[in-house]
Image (tube, rainbow, N blue to C red):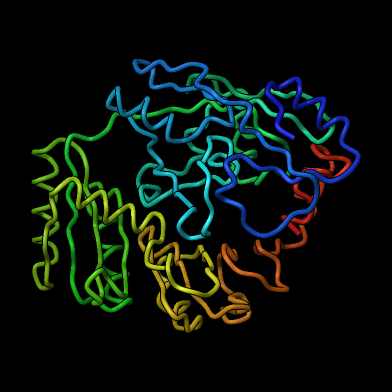
Length: 369
């Protein structure tokens, strides 16, 4: 099923006699859900783009590449650097605006700019009863219903099918530089990233690769902005870590490739095994990585996000034990739930929300189980 209008989508959901499996571009499918496939690709196109107001509104099935091309032409970008899951999951197709919002897809810049949900101004969606709902607005000062807008971000289609999303966008920076620290252990890298993020030098990316492009550990710190400011801040960061092996990368294309690989977890693309995404307190990262005993790891968000490659069928949560965070199985199969089980009070709230927005339980059933 591929509705071409919001009204047609609402009628399709209202008439559904069984479960519906939602699909945008088909690139971010994790876990499992049952039912007839309902595609949103027919709801496509940029509805409004006002570069001067830093505002863009697009239908949910709009390919993300179309959005990025329109922004590029005006020297702007999506601030939250959304991840592309295709290489990691082995999927094809084109990522869409709705899939990005439903997954709250956010990349390395989250440590500075925030997540996808922080730039969503408004949404239109169809709930599980076939009702068309609208929430939020098209400007930052319109805060009506912000909580519901953010509720849809990261809901993975279990509360409603997005039909339109309004975003705040930002100008692209004039320059970018990466300060590269060679050979640090995970503990030393975590300390270095914390030190950089706590500095006044406005870090827009902090990541650590235990196995960098040349096989040795590599820690990366990114600064962006006006050229003179970037050069100054990169130099000060180099001085800050004068006792380490420090390099500065200023080539725009090489910088883009470095951070794209971190954003998309490129080191795991060609390697077999299950992939887990662990969100934690950065200072806990080294200990949690040791508990995991993973075949490979990648640290982002200053160490607050750990990507782990484990043997097929592994349960990362069993290896981790109790910790202050959550673990999601992004690739692979197993008996454990895809998403971290919620504490009983939170689970009750989640179930109540799903009962309100999808009383028949037809939207991606089983995904959040």
